[in-house]
Image 1 (cartoon, one colour):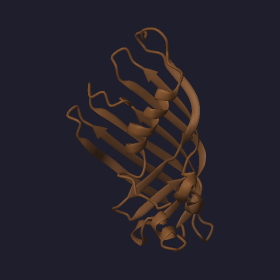
Image 2 (spheres, one colour; image 1 turned 30 degrees about the horizontal axis):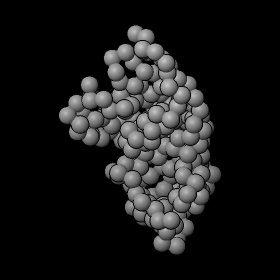
Image 3 (cartoon, helix red, strand yellow; image 1 turned 60 degrees about the vertical axis):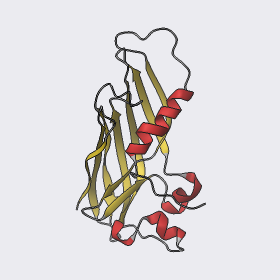
Image 4 (cartoon, one colour; image 1 turned 90 degrees about the vertical axis):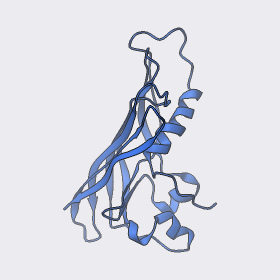
Amino acid sequence: MHYVPHRRHMVGSFAAGALAALLMAQVAVAGPPASSGPVERFVDTFGASYVDEADGLIALGGPPPEEGCFGLGFDDPANIMVVHTAAGPIKALIRQGDTPVFVYDLTLGHPCEIIEAGGTPVPLYVGSMSTILTDNDLDVSLTRANSFGASSTGWVFDPDGNRCHLSAHIRLQVTRDDEFRVLTEGITISC
């Protein structure tokens, strides 16, 4: 199976597509929505990854690329809450506790591409992170600007065993005119 790079390595395609499909498969909520709307809570898998092109870093949450790139994916269990609002948009909140994270030098190529070419990507840092994702218009109703994104924090270790703080974020938007924008994204590692 060949690795196919995503348009954005994480939240954009996930929040707008896979989670919407997942929610459609959930048990339907009967009756008209209340003013605050029905709330669904469930556990499913989610994978967070971040790209910081300016600093040449990529952080992949979940299993190592040797497992995640070809079939298993980079997903780990997460708590998901979905609110169906009376105004129409569906809002989502995803919270994921400690999950493994691997940080690579992006200038060497995407880890999955390196593996596909027969190489072995060597992470700059390995550790764990917690993630929160929010989406104010999950089903992209275009009744408002759809702002969504995620942030993760955690602790990672370099090859010498030095402990460093990881902070990663991505914020995206789909305008009412259906224009996709990356508002901000980045990875900060402080040792």
